[in-house]
Image (cartoon, rainbow, N blue to C red; front, side, top):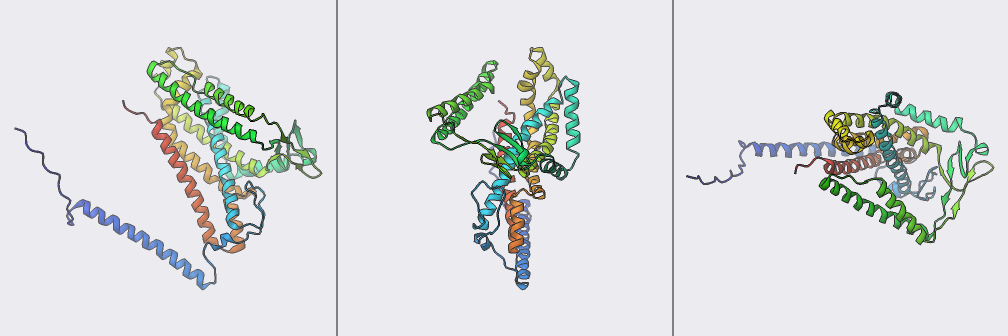
Length: 392
């Protein structure tokens, strides 16, 4: 005879209930933390007021009065501290985003190279990892900065390759002069990326259904290139460019990458890539050896084995520690202040010296790095969920 299902137990609000006690403890803990934060903030404001130190974020809308050597937002010294901090934020993100992309490429190649059948390639990859990850990042930044500013020639004797110049003033190169045709090229690029994404999804679905591999890299890349060129042609194929030229004291016109930017980018990429290489190596090593033997039995080449069998399975092991390396690269970019790169930390130091608003400036820097780190973590967690093995 079937017994009737018992009703779920009712919530008890007595102290004997473990759930109720846990709720009370959490509320008390949150209240104590909030009280501690209020006390510290109140005590800081009182002490600052007694010493005649001004506080608040109103200074952000005052005239900054200082120039910034590397600026992508059209800043000048007559604008506000807020605009100066925005320039510093853009400079920080510029290093972080480009650095993450280059680090991923270089670190992955080094990690895969550790499994090469060529002893020389394996040895070079291992030597790279052991050398660069054991030298402090600050020393590497200083090394690259001194290399760019001391060993390179002056602008009057700059090394030249076509319309590209390299000197103590940085790397100067031609840049296109904006025309409506470039907008069409950009639209073609976006359309190409969308088509390439749809083609890659179809290729993966086809592989899962039939076991027949389709190109998920070269053909999508060709689609992007064709659509971009097609958009450029529809826009009139603009070719006008702003070329750099040797001036009396510096390279004039064109685009430029300053020695500070190149030093911090190169230092961060080379340093972090050594750790990424170990992450990739460990991820590949975690794949059972039988998978490699099965790929060889199917007649796959070493490149196909790594691309189609080993790396896809290693990805779920690689992504979490790779996220840590991305966060480390972003946070290590704050060391750029040591070589004069005007990131958000450098702007904050200048603002502190001029206004005395140390608490506010440090709070802004903390907010910037907290936001960038949480954003990076959220994106990588989303990607990790997509890459995880799902049971059918």
